[in-house]
Length: 245
Ligand code: HEC
Image (cartoon, rainbow, N blue to C red; front, side, top):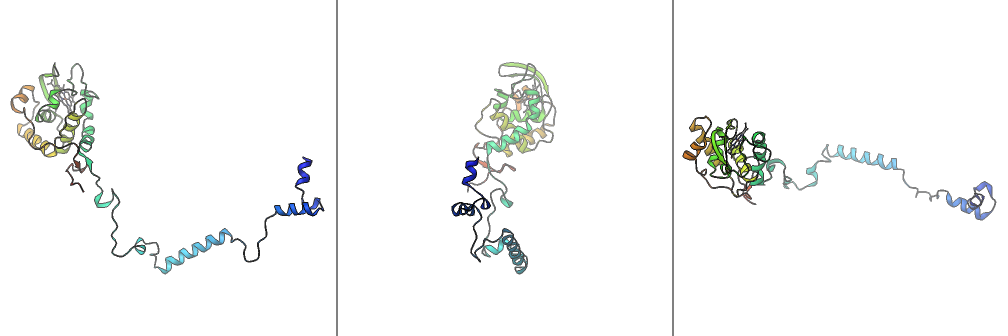
């Protein structure tokens, strides 16, 4: 300790010029007059004065974006902003998102993966799901009862109609979701127009659960219209295809 002490003496402890110089070197350096650093407070206060002054001089428009761009400059919306809020999605994603939401009630009976149970037929691997597209549409809209064979097994249950409050968008989403998910893999999508056709046909039929026999006899066909390529870009709200830029 005493060693240390003698190497860094305080001023009043020594008369040696060398140790005095060492002590002085530890003090803050003196600046020549006029070259002292400005206090941070002065810098901040000046900044505030300049900003307020600027605001007054420019009539409060000092910070206006328009002051810094050419008058005829039209700023483009950032993606997802304003008019162009819509960001196109591929049809498969847009339809499936709606379909997945709407399929919650279906899964309550048909199972989370559409696997079915001993009394309820599966959606996974079902020829009623991936076959002619008018059939699953009519089942959803009207419900179903009576004997039915699904993926080689026989069932005779009772499905209530699921069409209440279902828009053409919802129905198309549902159909596409169950036909491209839950173990099924259709590569063409049902459009909103095609789903609207099914809703019209179902209205005309007049209600009541449909049977497998009736489906085979009257509704064993595809919905009319050109199916959609899953990679088509669509508006995620309206599901209308958007032109590629
Ligand atoms: C309350 C239970 C229940 C709900 C909810 C339900 N289903 Fe069904 N579904 C059944 C039963 C039971 C059958 C078999 C009817 C029969 O035996 O005739 C069936 C049959 C089907 C069939 C034909 C057979 C097959 O398995 O492929 C399809 C397709 C189908 N349902 C789709 C759906 C969809 C899509 C939803 C949701 C929008 C849905 N179901 C909601 C119980 C239900």
